[in-house]
Length: 238
Image 1 (cartoon, helix red, strand yellow):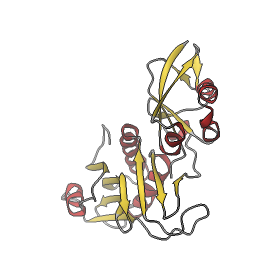
Image 2: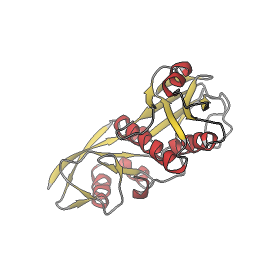
Image 3: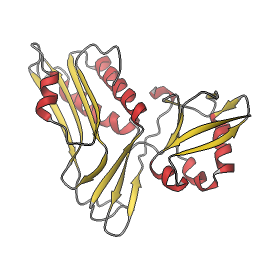
């Protein structure tokens, strides 16, 4: 047997009353045994574990993924920078609003003639079942180390599909954001507008919401809700 620490995020952290828990695991251990051990030692997390994602060493894990005593483990709800990058990039988890001019300046090169930018903002009216009718603010939380690695992965995926893209920026705000504040930014640079930059920017924001471990809490006048997505990453998303 060995004891291992697990990081918790978003609604799971709220249910546990802590961002970290410890469980005892047998050797050899797997993710399936980890889930069972958590249900036994922390039964308040049982419901959330049914849809939760497990990462081992910042990679999405399956039930048969082995666990070693030295592994870094995290468990989080479905999601609502790096080396070897061939072109300029800008990846950030930011408490402050992004500086669009500075980001564009980072991506500009002599061969760049177009930069396509998607920007997301906090809206005041949600109109979705289970969420506050009027949003006062959003609280964003991230598994920061893994988030930067997944932003880098998205850049590699973009270049595999749109090799003429010459620069990529991905920014996700964290912390408390008021209505009207920017939440996300994805920018893709290319020589011309018809070299995949529009498609790459759309892919980047969609992928950001699938595999980058960031969660938002919608806060209304009478209640707040952690928003969970429908996409469930698998080991194929590593």
